[in-house]
Structures are given as C-alpha cells and as structure tokens.
Image (cartoon, rainbow, N blue to C red; front, side):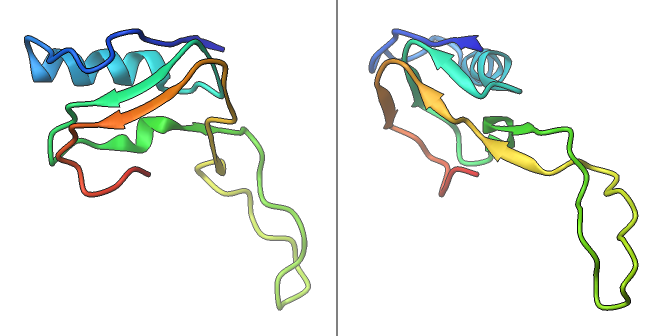
Length: 97
C-alpha cells in the first residue's frame, strides 16, 4: 500500500526531483491509497517502477519435462488498485510499462 498524490496538473519546479518522488511513491506498490498521477515525465523516464515484483518463481514443466530453474528475477505485476483517480497527462514518455 502506498500514498497517492494530489498535484493535479501543477508543473513541478524540478522535473528530476518530480520523477524521483513518483518513483519513490509508486515503486513496489500494488494498492494506491489516493490518486495515481503520472504527469510531466521526461522522454527518457524509466517507468518500470510502476510494476511490483511478486516474489514467485515460474512453475510447470517445459518441453523437456523438467521444471525450469527458478527465474533470477521474479515475475512482475502491475499496480492492482487505485482508490482515487488516475491522471496520466503532459508526459514526454512514449509509453508506460
């Protein structure tokens, strides 16, 4: 669970610190208490922080009939719930992960 924001479309005074604030707020978060606002992200922003690692390893059997080795990096899941509104605006990034 993480806290959301209430900045609406206010332009941040420092784009770098704004990105770091968003990353800090939403990294590893599955439930946002409040609003999820993704605004004014630069073109080179890495939005992978919007995913959270589940801590699970792959299961099942491959073509060889053997179980795959545990994946070194657990699968990633999206934010699942936002208890406020979602605002995605005024960004330079081409897409969100």
